[in-house]
Image (cartoon, rainbow, N blue to C red; front, side, top):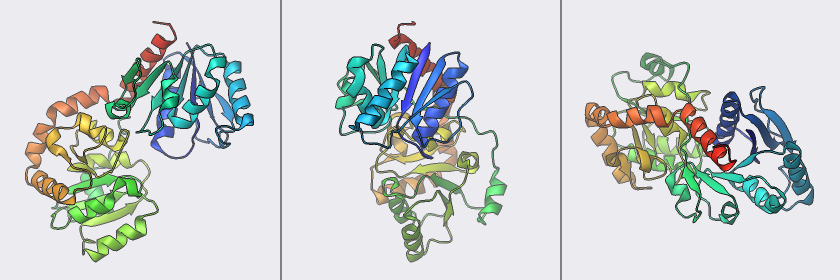
Length: 339
């Protein structure tokens, strides 16, 4: 089947990585995959994926963008179109009446403006929560999938690399140092916690978070590592992972941890609140509840791992990159009339 995959953003984020992995995986399954991407998109695709570049940096109503976008799709003449996120979906909605093939859109996060998605023939959501407010007759949840890391860093290497106290538990939290990740709440919750916390990531709040750590005298237990390439390789050395976000659409770190049989504590956000055991969820923004759950989990690590046994087994099947590609392929084939 000829599939036209479209994304209007570029950068180092999870959306762009997801898009590349999906395009490559669909091509590997034998589909003819055309990727319509911004001129600035520089990440490599598999050689089987056919690339079409469009000036997505222009505004959604720009006539040049709309014409170039329309011409790219007409040139491809796909069996099905699959857009990702708001801008690509909005553009598709604008020209849909001129395109004969079915259009599918994926929602990657909670949206206030969903009218464009209502015009699509089908909608995929990366969690149930992102689809909750969308009254569409043809919608489906397909969780993002992750690859098992090709290299795993052992605990002793992590202790040495970050100069940790080897006898203490190691907890990790991974993400951009931005407001939505709510790391300041996690730092507040860490007071009185006898464990090492690795905050892995970089971003505009690094200096502010470092000042908070110093002011609370937590520099001996909270370590700002900066950006680490392939951070998922470190996850296997953690006793558990913490997610402190204010909101999420999915959460790749959760999936990477569960697929490596590492437990997760999280605020009550998608998709952790759909996947992990409910006793390991805390109210968003509640540092006291987070502190109490951290302390309880650290005191019962063996019970924590035992309580996650079924979740680990399910995740190995359902959160793999292969499962995501297979489910997406089948759903697109259904919309395109292949099955």
